[in-house]
Amino acid sequence: MTADLSTIIDFIRYGASRFAEAGLTFGHSHDNPIDEATHLVLASLHLPPDLPPAYGAGKLVSSEREKVLKLIERRVTERLPVAYLVGETWFAGLKFKSDPRALVPRSPIAELIESGFTPWLDERHVEHALDLCTGSGCIGIAMAEYNPDWHVDLVDVSDDALALARENVALQGVGERVEVLKSDLFAAVRGRRYDLIVSNPPYVTDAEYAALPGEYAHEPKLGLTSGADGLDICLRILDEAADLLADDGLLVVEVGESERALAALLPEVPFVWVEFKVGQMGVFVLEKRDLVAHHAAIHAAAARR
Image (cartoon, rainbow, N blue to C red; front, side, top):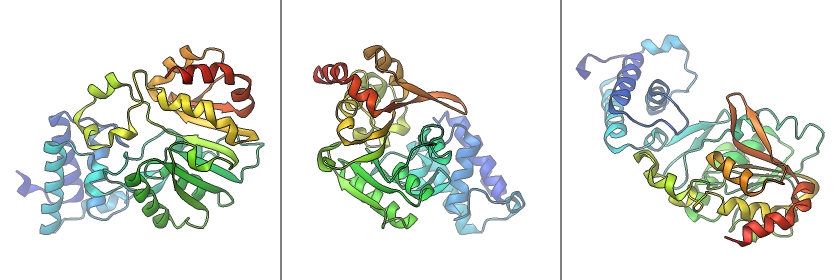
């Protein structure tokens, strides 16, 4: 019975058990019920995710017990992502506001940001960077936070996402170096030049979207789907990015499970697929010179959409 629960650890254990029993899907920042329950309990109690273990024995007061139990129940019955339930999540070591206006922040690109995009930026000077399809703003804001001398533009076509991104810019206090712009991809930033363009665009195929677990139905479809093979938006980016990149500029794009389809569609393009700590995760790096050299093939593929 829940009446027997009293400590932080009790509620984390109980939440994890409920989540596992319910067969929930863990794909929004966490990959297991224990981490998911820890996020829910600690965030709902306004405690940091790195809370020292000794505090796990702390007891909840009655109002806290009621709040946590309601959130656990909603996670099970409504299949809402925990980040939406508690209104926050963490990305690249930074806290971000999260709600249904944009996808829950999650991308292996966080690892690249934390490592300084090594080795690709080791010998490059970056002043201006672009986070294309920014959503909540997490990638661009994290780039600005980790690189205080960068100026970063955040671009998205969704008014809801941009409103959330602006709130996150204010939360992280990077407003002097980060500009938030409404744009259909590059439309509103033509004429600008970037040393680095990073994008986590929509790349879920129509078939994959139809089969997604219920948790993903709470996220905006606009931020997920990109045609039959998931590459509609990516091909537009590849077709247009060179015009906005500096001569030694770099393009970094996440395409997830559409990696194989992209490599098969443009076999002559020398995509460099990033190896993360857990292996490849569908993120490629391209030099501007490669975009220019293979523009005819890229443009032809994009024009067929």
